[in-house]
Image (cartoon, rainbow, N blue to C red; front, side):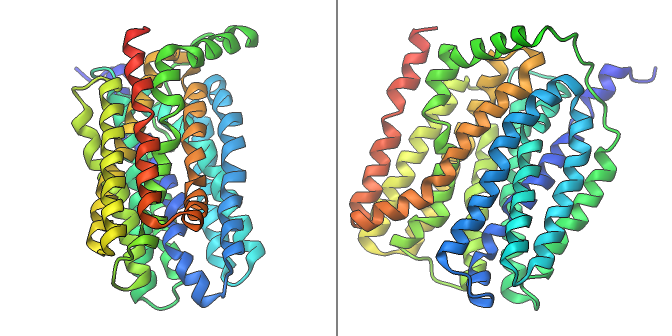
Amino acid sequence: MPPGPVQRASRSWPAPALSLFAVGWGANQFAALLPVYRVEDGATAAEVTLLFGAYAVGLIPTLLLVAPVSDRLGRRRVMRPVLVLSFVATVVLLLGGHSLLLLLLGRLLAGIASGAAFAPGTAWVKELSTGPAGTGARRAAIALSAGFGTGPLVTGLMAQWLPHPLLLPYVPHLVLTVLVAGFAWNAPEPVRAHHDPLDAETGRVAHALRSPAFVRRTLFTAPWVFGCATLAFATVPQVAPVPGPNVAVGGALVALTLWTGVLVQPLGRRRTPRTTVLLGVGAGVVGFLVATLASLTGWGALTVLAAVGLGAAYGWILVAGLATVEEVAQPADLATVTAVFYSLTYLGFAAPYLGTLLLSWLPGTPAMLLLAVLLAATAPLVLSSARRR
């Protein structure tokens, strides 16, 4: 007997997962190239900050605006133009070379593509996944994290050892996006439920966001998702640099952090979201304590080890947050509540800037120790979520 529509849909989750992978690659490939722009293009620290800011300006508003649209119109109708926009963003960066204006435009477009992809794409993976609770959340988190980690690894290695370091590193993402678009273009679209009036939907979303599970598990831990990740490869190396070729080492450290986040996520399969987020908090605290030792000794090997701990924190807190969203949101509001969670996680992108400020006020050792204490302070709130359900 041929498979029915439900069976076909349940086997189709890799299509939106690969879409998340491709957009995540495009979003983070730029990170490993920052040293190249400083050397080849003479970009100043202020210009680099501006380029990062352009990505956030495009991402966060789009994240919140597009998610409700996908809840009403469907995931595929949103993700098709998103893949095209991700491709265009990389073309603009490739052509940008020595033009700050084009680089700003490329980063803005990459932010818009990411904001439009992450919540609808995550919801699409969840809707096409069958299995125990949290299965879709883990698949989406792994796909996104793998894209975030692989992009800078490939661009960093290519920029370090191939000619045209501001041109060739962008080509793999263009090829990847074309292949993924061909695979995902006609992926199954989950059946859209009848939509209630807008005020009823707003009330349901507000109820989910006010739930003790969401507030106590995610409100204060979500910023540490990208906070831990970005501090691992942007701030900790300032207190204990890793020796080696600058661009390749930078890309490898980004990849190590984010791929650790990928590899630890299946370990949370049999655990509740509350337990998983506590694992993440614990791993992050250990990572910052190892960074404290790195600062004391100056050993770059400890910076690498700290990246493993902070990468595990990134992965566990991310997947626990997405599983919590799946728990508290109604199916018709899944992308909207997911968008709010992702917006909270992206607050963590301010962490490298704040970390640099912290290092201007404190030596590296007490600064890393303070970060460990701040992250540990979120644990009692998470623990209280079980008692107040």
